[in-house]
Image (cartoon, rainbow, N blue to C red):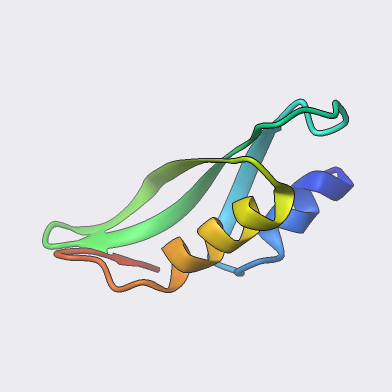
Length: 78
């Protein structure tokens, strides 16, 4: 895992892995996709994923933090 991936996975220990598009290139768009385990009415699933796009790295991290801590309707991150 590289430093940029560690910046994302260290946000919340429920994030199992991530990819970051072009982390070394200066641009006006930051993209990350995270994977996590979740539970719904059918049980625990291991294929949860969500994509994030922001215009700054800090906004990207904030969006991921908000997603991980916000209550979900009908499911939860494990």
